[in-house]
Image 1 (spheres, rainbow, N blue to C red):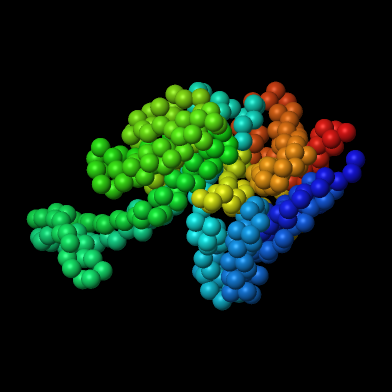
Image 2: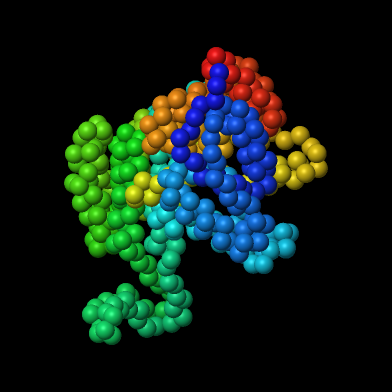
Length: 403
């Protein structure tokens, strides 16, 4: 068969360590042999980010703004040890954080459902997508230690210098602690818009949860903005056959444990941080978790939810065999290709992405998998494959599907 034409360039963001090795293998096995595609390439490996003073990260985000869809390999966010290891100029910021800020995006994570890797929660039958508002709250708080009797106040002074409000936080009779948090209407609105954009794209209903009965201004502001967005999107949701529901966070947690799944669960920063890990663990593994950054105006960047798999990379460097799970990295490509095909109106591209995902799932359900999945799988017969053997098995199934 001839190669399938991808109409618009796809922005490719390369990465680090073992995932970089896998990334090249994915392109060589699953992309170039089957697709006539233009990849606008950006090397986000930590050494090239250092060489360009991180300008390459900014450029890659702007390219996604231009073309609409990107696919990203896992990358290193360097700490002091990494600066020394790679002889870097400084501890560069997280590329994901930089791209998220430029696109004003929200990250959505969703598990990959495989029949012989059952969810730890018996009721979960469909993927639960988590949308986390990654700004403010406790992650940008201001904290103080109170070392004795006194009072802590919250004061708002407007831009002209006029004091507008002064609230007593607590009258301390002894030592204690206090903190202040903030958020921005603009950021909350962008988060809400991205959630509705994602839900409409995926045709899944939205749950939003806070504790507005206790936090009658801070949490209530989130609820008000989401409720208003739901009213604005009412016609679009009705056309897509989806709904919007608000829950108190404790009720949402209780309900999610009894629910079959299949929805987007939108959460504030801390709740999203915690619940995304619970959902990932509950469905089996971060190696089976997709991740997509969605901007309010509908730009998409797909990636794996896990890191660069340093431990396996050290083994690979020594020439040792590794059994690294490539599923989430391949699904980053299929997600990006399916979205590219959808936006371009090229169903052949969407169909190819679906066929590749089916080949992966059928390979694992057939008992062939990497080491990390063996203990999770209920398959009667299981075979451990190394990094490259697994991709070879997937490619054989893909070829059979495309004949």
